[in-house]
Length: 599
Ligand code: GTP
Ligand code: SPV
Ligand code: MN
Image 1 (cartoon, rainbow, N blue to C red):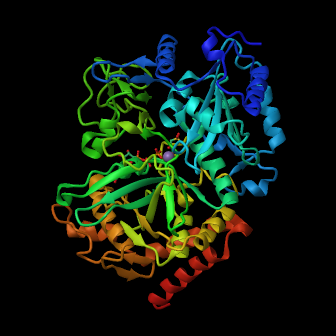
Image 2: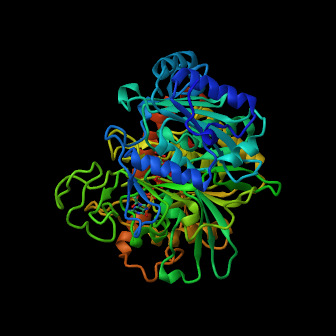
Image 3: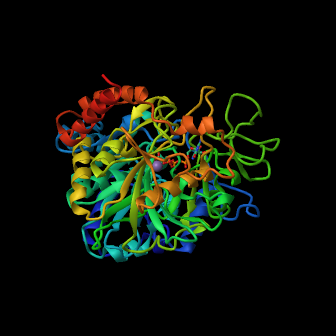
């Protein structure tokens, strides 16, 4: 048996037999020197932070400038999610579907058992109980992550409601997600992120980074979550949630799915431009939404997370002041640059990097060279309580009622600034056929357009065709469904420049969306959906030429014809589970384009 060094952390604060047994099994397999049960107290936080600094896992930043802030440099081979090493281990390959990597559960367990045999010898094993969602909410889920990474523990403490409260909520129930994480030697050859949806179990080895290692986030809240949601009749989505309020109108809540590094955090914290005096946007969540029907027939959403794991580069007071304020204290930074005065820096910050800045790997950095100072997927982990525009409803057990759902991607062409669907089914089709250029949030080529349905391609824990069917079926559960929209902040002009200024100015588009959802503004019907007419979007005080605005908002039927034709390949990939209403929707739109063009 492992020898605890202090009595207090050795003692499990639970009598839950299933949990104790599982921890005993994991201990027997990995043979750590020490087992620490995390209680989530401030005292524990201080002790672990000190240990992490002593072990050089964290670098203390200038505590006068950034109290409670630390920098972590990950292994350079371990800087993003790894989709090719992420597996859905359902009993059959069909259940995982054609868009997921699949491994037979027995094979996966045999492989990872071998890798984990004695893997924590000489190390500490932490047991991290946590809740995804507001404490006491019937929609929240409990997880326990076992990990040998102190960095993971400190991140989980920010990203979830972690510690004793979770064990209290769990009681003696066996209904919790088991998340087993081991760093091993952080080698891509021994890196597997495996999910066992039927067993509510995640087993991740060989990576200490973000979505690969913080198992409450993408693994539980999305992959396992989406599987459970299909079974239980709700939705687990890669969506931000925001509330928007105007001087005349009461608050309206909106959920939006954009792929990784495509603007969720920025949109969720949007600061309205001066023209929108009196308007306010409040953040409920910036990455994940769990949605279900309420007793009033509307769709209600909670944010299962407790913090932000946000993209650092590009974040500035100009682009996202609320994010900058959220990272002033008690924040962990991963793979950003370090300035000589012990502060952080990244590309796109308000100020230039001072002389003597070292890059994300701790190497001297030369201004104007080709190397970036901060890694493109460098991140901050900040408590949501730091956010000056945090919604006061984040802890509401029922969540907030959603009036509009927005799907958005990163598209240089074709997709206009905003497009409203004709109805729920057409909206589901829009989400299902979303395309987006790949980003640095996952390893692999950047900037290639790929289909990323509902921004869930890397996160859907079951067959994508069944996921679409589930979305269509949800319509039957919701008497007052939200309106569905599509947006694109990233359309480019001939010189490769963004046509739309984006960020805070997206308020102008959000206003049209909210007004459309309440049926109080006009629009123009096109064969592809509704768009704003000239004058429907308030452009006053905005420096954009009418040519650029037209180019950003136009629906070009030649481009759309190509787009619809290219969707066929994706539909064929999904194969027999692709729902008929979605296939017919595509054919109908193609036929309409042909008829409009007189063919
Ligand atoms: P994940 O955390 O990976 O899921 O990303 P996210 O969807 O929250 O993306 P985030 O808001 O962090 O933005 C990612 C990148 O897109 C940053 O570099 C932003 O500066 C940039 N970005 C965000 N909003 C806009 C916009 O409206 N226009 C333009 N041009 N860029 C934007
Ligand atoms: C994403 O990639 O969508 C993220 C970052 O939010 S990670 O937690 O690494 O998945
Ligand atoms: Mn994300």
